[in-house]
Every structure is written in structure tokens, then in C-alpha cells.
Image (cartoon, rainbow, N blue to C red; front, top):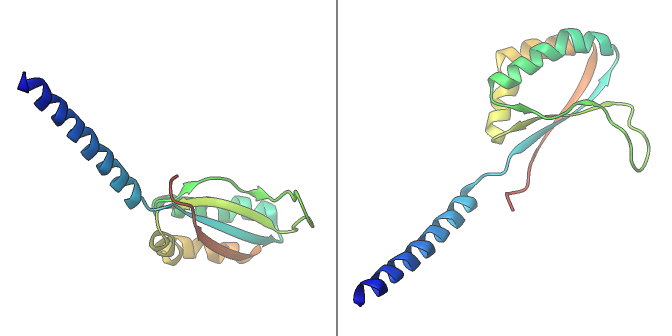
Length: 129
């Protein structure tokens, strides 16, 4: 007769401990970092042909996940004339800084600077809900 109570108590304790562990793991999850670029492009064909393949390869090498790019469409307000690129998702700000300073990206950027000016922004995403 005592055995069912011991089993029930053990199962209940296991569920409580398991739920606590899951909550702890969720709290430790770092939100992703998103890279946003504003590009004032003077030669779109050259950017796509010469800069983009090198920059994309470098960012993938350093751990990014590509999301989107292209010219922005204004929903409210003035249409931006620059190309807006929300191109990469990173695991940390340190990771994006390592990529930006890498020889691979600096080579791509040297080419890209001939055809565009860049403003690169990093923003942390929201933690998992």
C-alpha cells in the first residue's frame, strides 16, 4: 500500500524538477542579433556581381544565417531611396564584430566601397517568449 504513494510522490517530484529545469534553460537562451544594413548603391549590378558573393560567403563562414535583402517598401512615410538589408541573424554581438573585422569581409568591403556607401547596424532580438 505504501508503494503507490512513493511512486506517485516520485513522479510528482520529477515533474516539478523537470519543469524547473526547462524554465532555467529558457532563461539562459540568448536572443539572436540581427544585422541591418542601409546601402546607398550607385551601381546595383556591380554590387550584386562583385560584392554580394564575397560578403555573403564571409558572413556564412563566421556563422550568420541569411534572412532577407532588397529595396525597402514603405508602408508609412517616405519611400527610402537606399537599399535596406536585414540580411543576417547572428548568435551574438561578438560574432558579428569578428565577421566585420575579418580579412574576408574587409576584402569584400573594399570592392563594395566602389559602388555603395554602407551603414551597418546590429540589434539584439527579443528573448524567446
